[in-house]
Length: 190
Image (cartoon, rainbow, N blue to C red):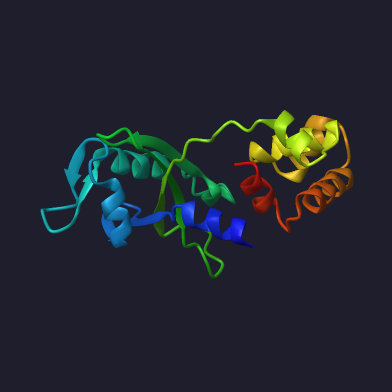
């Protein structure tokens, strides 16, 4: 459980920006404003009455709005994204989604942008992990794909085994490492 707590401490919670479909800024939490400070080309949010927001955020709203086709059912699942870097080199992922469309009306009413700090992935010495935890070659293959963030289905497809077999390998790896979750497997590889 301590390893899982360590993962949560390192994880950055996403920031949130909300716009109407015309690109008018409506809401953000304080954390978001701190994260986007210094990103991209700055434009004021409206007529000087709101926070300063990178122009790329407005472009993301326009890109998403322009992708919407009212006649197409399910079109509100579209997304748009961009990666921006601040002056100190920290990269942030910005992903825009449609919101609203409830109650039988499938048309979206707002745009939500999630802002997440990107964290560099580290290389895992799989051979060392294989020896340290007495993993079979196939279990090490599964762990390698877990480190990449692959789902059970993706691992199954890449290794040409069933999803049930993937789950079985993951259970064996957890038992050998003395952990109870996929996240704890990854934490043990630090």
